[in-house]
Length: 235
Image (cartoon, rainbow, N blue to C red):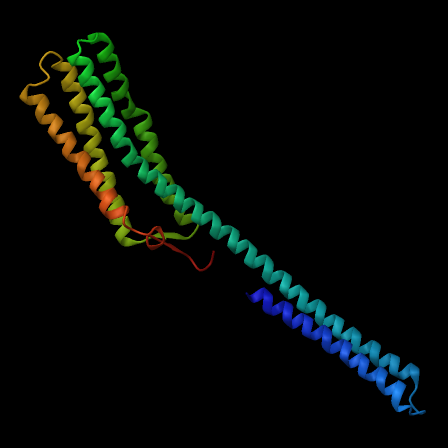
């Protein structure tokens, strides 16, 4: 919008210069005063045009500088928005993980019920629990890294959203512990998966899973992403 006004001003200045030169020319052609000297008139016209061109050049320079600053700010702002979106997606990956875990636990239980090889079942459980030191840590570190990166682009996470993030990460830790504990108990009691110890662990992991899912559905799912972030004026 600002660039449009600068262009209009520059066009107006050009029209004014041409109009002035035209008026001088008309005076010479139609008034016909003999004492007017062409050299003097041409000098005045040349001087006026030079001043006008100098003003136009200065004006154009200001327009260019303002445009470059605006372009730089828009590029930075776009990068900030992309990082905010990336951070949001990382949070939602926690919710996606819940459903993958549900399927995995059901698959293990089905394998046990169907008398699949205990060796194969235990290998699957061990492989899943190994995520504690691999993908689980990677997921958490990426969330914290992106959270820090927001600050470098002068993006502030609003207080309400920040509390939700803290709540999600705390529940995530409790949920993963209960998820792995349940799997270990399945492996330990592979011939007695209906025992109280296993059932208690199952109830705990399902409860935590529902708590996290509810936060994403009721707190994050109903919020507008623009209300969760503030973008600094000096971007």
